[in-house]
Image (cartoon, rainbow, N blue to C red; front, top):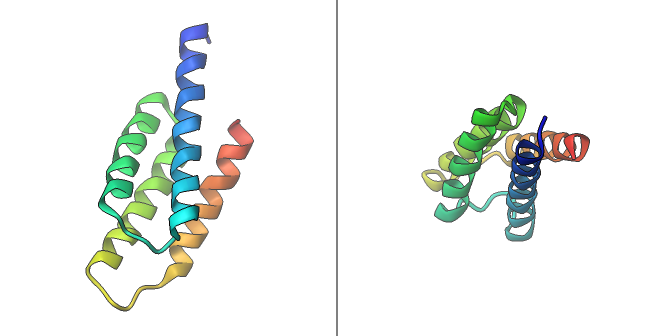
Length: 94
C-alpha cells in the first residue's frame, strides 16, 4: 500500500471516529439529519476502500436511526449493538 492510500485510510478512520464521537455525545438514539447524511457519505467511502464491515454497521445504524424518526416506540439495543461493534472494529483497524 502506498503513502497516498495509507493517508486515505487514515482519514477515513478519522471520519469513522468522528461519527462515533458525535453519536456518543448527542446520544445514540438521536436521529439528526446531519448524522444520517454523514453516515451515508462515510459508508460509501468505506465501501469504495473495502471496509465492508464498517459499511454494514453504518448502514445498520442509519436504518435504525431512520426508524426512530418515524416512531415513538424505538428499540435502542440494536443501535447500541451496532455502535459497539463499529467502535471495536475502528479500534482494531486503527
